[in-house]
Amino acid sequence: MSLSLDAIAHNTAKTVINLNILRQIEKDLDIDEKISVLFLIIEDYANVFRDIFDLFQKAKTENSYIIIDYVKKYPENWEDKILEALCILNNREVTRKLRISFNDLDLQYVPKIRSYSKNINIVAKCLYRLCESFNESEQKLLLSYIKSDNSNYESLLDDIDYLELHMLYWMQIKYITISKDEKHNMEKLLKHLKKFENLKIISIDLEKFENRLHVVDTHGNFGINDKNYLHPIFLEGSFLAEKNNKKKIQPINNGLCIIINQIYFGKEYETRFGSSTDCNNLSETFQAFGFKIEIFENLKRKEMLEKIKNISKDHDNKYDCLFLCILSHGYRGGVISSDEKEVSLEEIEKAVCCMELKDVIKIVIIQACQGKTRDFISTGSINNCLTIDGLSDSPALVSEDVRQFRKFLIFMSTIQGFVSVRHKDQGSWFIQEVCKILKIYGNQLPFIECVRKIMTSMQERNGKIEGTQVVQLPEIRNDRLDSDFQLKSIFNPAL
Ligand SMILES: *[C@@H]1O[C@H](CO)[C@@H](O)[C@H](O)[C@H]1NC(C)=O
Ligand SMILES: *[C@@H]1O[C@H](CO)[C@@H](O)[C@H](O)[C@H]1NC(C)=O
Ligand SMILES: *[C@@H]1O[C@H](CO)[C@@H](O)[C@H](O)[C@H]1NC(C)=O
Image (cartoon, rainbow, N blue to C red; front, side, top):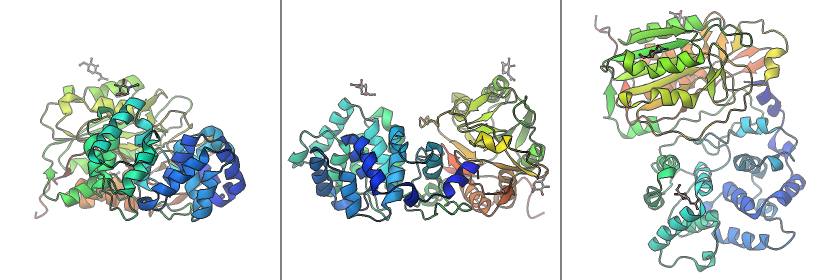
């Protein structure tokens, strides 16, 4: 874990915020932001519409502090919830009032990760994003659809265009339901959302929750002080989809594994010792499943993207599964090429997801850091064997614009904002685990179950870099697999 996370480890939400600070913050919030904060921190969504509506009315009068009113009434864990809500709102003016850096907050609450929330109801987070995505005319349209389903629509809301208030009303009349124990019901809303082309991604998220496919513990209990443990999170729906759908597991007959092994860089990034061990290990592992292996080393940015785009041209169409493994330094949202340029995950995704490969299962495995503080490397040498795959905390944004390409999944060595650990002889922790688990279970369990095992066993690893305790948590991103699949060992176990 990076030093920046370590820094927040000394703060608890209670030391960062109190009612006086909240009062200062509330002064700076617009009424729509106040409504959004309230919407996010609600505990029990079913019967809260009237309360929040009253607060909203009150907010129109001067010198009212409706968030303060609310947290006084529902004090449980309010500090953590408010911090997370402010993070999701991404109002930097406001968070500046807290004596804590925005990066630290980001690291703690990872507000951009769509399938995760720490203290806030994950479906509420999703609905909030929905509210934010609508423009005025789309919102009118949605409301008209919903009013047509509900003849006695609340007249208090006639001229109110805060969608969150409407949503709370929908929950009140049980048009939609959010609950703490995953019994969500979004069916009626989803039916209308389908009519909005640009909202597909949010709809897909909501649908996952609706089907109770998510495994996110919305009220996660890893403490801020607990730097050695992160909750088993961020698994998007797919492996449970497989549970519901036992029969739909595609066997892999012809696999192709392409490894891009970046060892040497220019001036700024250090040589990635140990990466060839990873490369050999991956190659050996996938060979055992009958994959054709192709290895490229030290590709420049342009070559890297071209090689990926050329995959379908360079190989005939007989493959049913492609693993693209990229081993390199990284930054938040991407990897580094050997000429020390940034290659974003989005660019990689776009290069992989071409029409020619639309029926091929495409798995991208990335061993690289996802952001860290520069200080960490420049202060003193790392003289033990563990090191990390990254350098600067680039301002590159994590895009939420996941394109809807089928049969595609990225498995990252770490969640956004965190480092990845590599042993200079034995290779990276992540690739070691990937190979170990696939070797043992690859031909016995569906892929997503293997991924789950990899995530579990990663949590048991830890070590020290520069005296700082390090753990690492891999993540699935952009899961667009419509069914699970299973590798096939080319060796007959009976022999
Ligand atoms: C709202 O969004 C829709 C769909 O993206 C677009 O067609 C429309 O022009 C937008 N309307 C306004 C007023 O921006
Ligand atoms: C793969 O990794 C494991 C664990 O680090 C190691 O024991 C093994 O020797 C490696 N295999 C190869 C071919 O490098
Ligand atoms: C990609 O394919 C094109 C056309 O076949 C070829 O000219 C180019 O050299 C290839 N790029 C790489 C990096 O292999």
